[in-house]
Length: 278
Image 1: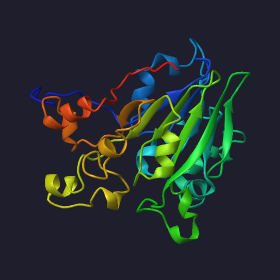
Image 2: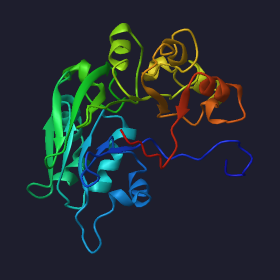
Image 3: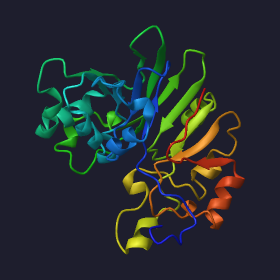
């Protein structure tokens, strides 16, 4: 990529921002690249001459580093909300003192806990997005202390959001497996942002010579009998987009057979700067 010889596009780490009114925005996760991503998205800039950010809140799917480290870029005393499970809140607030920087003064960050299966409102005015949290995995990050004291079903969640006009979008960046319950849910959405981390089970091992498998890291593969291309092939309603794609995944190479398989199956691979209007 850096040499200009790769048939693909550069991408920052996955970051989604949603809004019902284009004034107040809610982040899905907080990526390590968040500062750069805010700078390249005018919608997320403060109004001219103001320090008041339009970012009203952040929803955390998990305590994985690629979902939380961007929070520390939002520590400049600007009030906002963090929506997470009780287990993720305990990991960040009780086990990691660095995240105390988010609560240096009263009313800096409001921590809003939700339970798996809860439906809650994202709103700062009369325009509201409804959000439902769906349990996806039971694996906590390796850095977490005493994971056995936490609720396993809160380790990794996905979000299904319903706009004021009834359109629905699912954000599932880390999915360990696909079952009938999940298929039924995904058949109700209009846009699906789905885990595209690895193409194959032993991808990291083959590329690096060592490492964990896709399933050991909590990700269903794109290819294979149990992979997302095959398991989600019958989903006709949603626009299907892969997100959270690891840089080892060969489908990023637009000259590859893997890329052609993805496109022939009706999937897209998310790129920086995309805007979706529901």
